[in-house]
Length: 606
Image 1: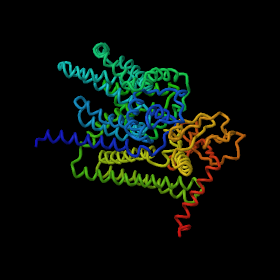
Image 2: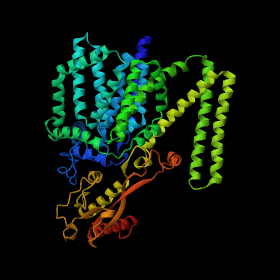
Image 3: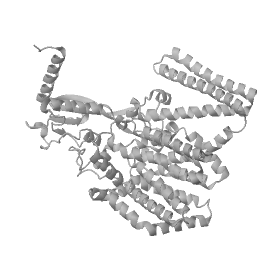
Image 4: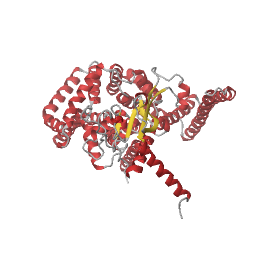
């Protein structure tokens, strides 16, 4: 087997493992968190006309979906799979996995190791993983635009091969159609790229920019019909969903009106999210300095893209957490340049024996830093309950571990040289960076705190109690009708999208507005705690649950950042809902429960 053949096999194996890692992080227990209101709006719209449609949701009076592409693809999934909290998130997760693979298409230009590094960083990026696990059109937009950039670049590289050029031109046209139908995030991205090209115009030769615009116009003339067919096909839902055409115009209108609408996500919180969850920004910062010094066109392009994405995010009032995706993506791509420089520097210099000792030094420093972190956590935990007698010694131990690490670094510097010590410290920093990335992914997606508004990323959430709320209703319904969704439901005010989604199997009560005053009123009555009618009859009884919560601080960071960092405690606002059931239905359920308890204990059996 030749060396080249082995190298190619190794590269493809590495790519496969990276893509599998990205897919595992994105598809793992997608239903762990209940859909929030923003996700539920898209899910309810996509589920119309499928077995997963909600009878409670009034689609006629609600706004159409803002993403024809998301609605169409998710509608197909709803037709194939039973509805659950995971189904509306499958398409974004698939798009996020595809994004992990796309850097590989630049291997001929950038080299195999850089594109593998880019794919790995995209695969494990905490915010990109979280956006991919969210029912939204943001990841579809990013993947479609990335696909267009790759296809257009490939087309430019295939000028001497007519058939290849035609294929890539058609691929770029299909990608353009996906961009147009993916939602308002694409319009934001186009604005970002427009500003980037304007800035790049000052750093590039005039003929380069002129040739780019000429090629773009020529491509559009050749493939405009493919773009149009793609848009019509998706907007019409392949002829099965005419609502997509309305959604196409609604998407543009929503983006335009967003310039005059204040969103629930402040720019400070957004940039703080990157600071907290994406430690790769430390590496990208070093590359930004290199880009400004070297003035490489590729690095300047990424730098201008980062500046443009940051400016648009800062000044677009209706920003959301998903709007951070372009900032994060450019930070990752910038980081690749510095990491390549770092790996080349790390592999130079000492021989193999010294290198092993250097790794040992890095491991010692790593253990000391982890120990310091755990002791700091103990300090926070005891200081939170004013147990300073236990808290202060732990803080002293943590500082002692840090000082010991510095002494070890100085010791290796005098013994083997300062370059050796610096490399050992760099290895330690790399391990700590990887640990911080893993910690962020788990906190955002796989821990109980992920379902709370204490996280920077989520402005509002549906709590896990919404599922126990549903379980209570299903138990009452089974006890009375033998069916999980056999009772009618009435809302005192329009149902929040998340509740309409989770209660989608229950039929809506069709009586008059004075339903509670009628003898044949609804079986189940739902209302926010603060809006329970004064004239509520005694025939109804029930329970109150906290179903939703939203972020309770206005500044960039919570009041006690150290406590948040270790215990994820921060101010939040709660929204409570009351579940009221007709007393006769509750009586039947209690009889069944008593009978079930008697059977389990052996009573009543002759």
